[in-house]
Length: 274
Image 1 (cartoon, rainbow, N blue to C red):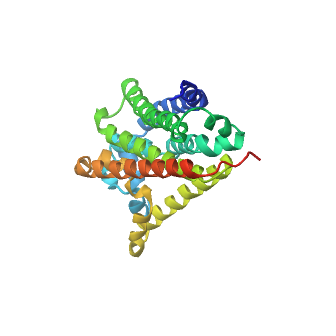
Image 2: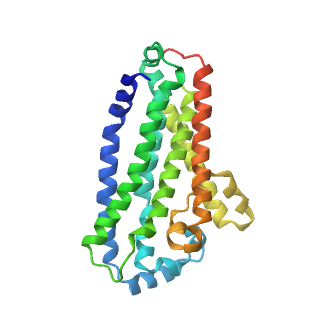
Image 3: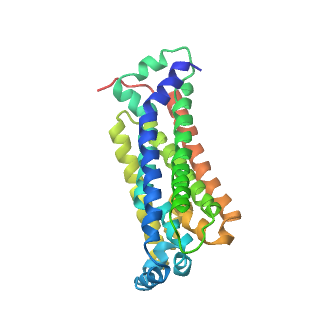
């Protein structure tokens, strides 16, 4: 496989990865510090004031959230953390095919003496490594915060690992789905828009499925139904078989999306850049 393609894949991704991982590390550290300012009694009273419909949205018992571990588990579903991971998935997934066509460089890449699928492998490997680095940055930020911030009770860092792994699996899955969308597109921003819309619809289906009892079946139409890092952190019985099942589903969907994207790239005609 051409070394230039590997070099290009790392060159295209390193800045986004460096900025994203640094932001996640610092934000996680700051989040631990902010949570340490809430006394457990006051935090528990605040949770008890939440309306009843919030409980199904959270997906975990409020009693589990009223602990230092419960407070910090919010980090793994926090909007900022998820947004950065989704940004990585959309950015890296849209780059290898639609991005190269849009830049007018796909013809040059395919003129090399390599199989077409080789154009997709290096960016996919780099994107997967990045998808692992980002949750690791969240976990390291959590560890750094726990080490330097005083919490009311001791927190075991190992309990957050299932949540970090689930976050990695979700990021990998969305990257594969975005790559699949990219495989039949010619414009990177259109790919990002479609994949972003797909994520938003998936999020809406997940929320409706949680809140509307009669529509609970809607959760099975979205890959986000198996993105449950808080459950895996706070509910011990979920950390065994359920964690394996959730992550295998996400990884399987991501791999299937990559495989279909490779088949489409193998057979499609490459249009000229606009």
